[in-house]
Image (cartoon, rainbow, N blue to C red; front, side, top):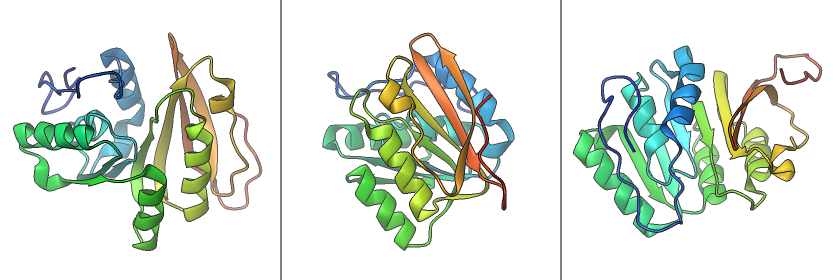
Length: 196
């Protein structure tokens, strides 16, 4: 897997051995980051299911200031740290081995907010709506920020948006078997809005 854009374009990102981590296809990653565009400049990025650290590295390559990566797997965390060292960006990224939900609550308790949040958990476990609801509850997405959820396009449970107070789905895009839902902060005083 390689970085698709920015100052580290073409640099290789290693993935842990086995099937526990699912690297995102380069064309899907490129489409996501082309959509994120101006949201990346000087952004603080959160990836609570970070796997290889690919989203954080891609974000830093395209102008993000710093990132927080979380993964429950010791092997994934070791791979992430190795990827960061090889690219020379270890100082810009905090890496935690922890449960994603526990980490999000801790970050909220510390008063953290993020301009870009990537929600790309293991498929077919129903984690997408649960994490989305938690991020909404603890108010982790900063003003003007954007959050994206990566899921299997055929997983209807993952596609269901839970009742949200602060976030609204802005649009959904599909790339083969992968769907990406984009969420923004709901404007003050606005009602519900259908995805486009």
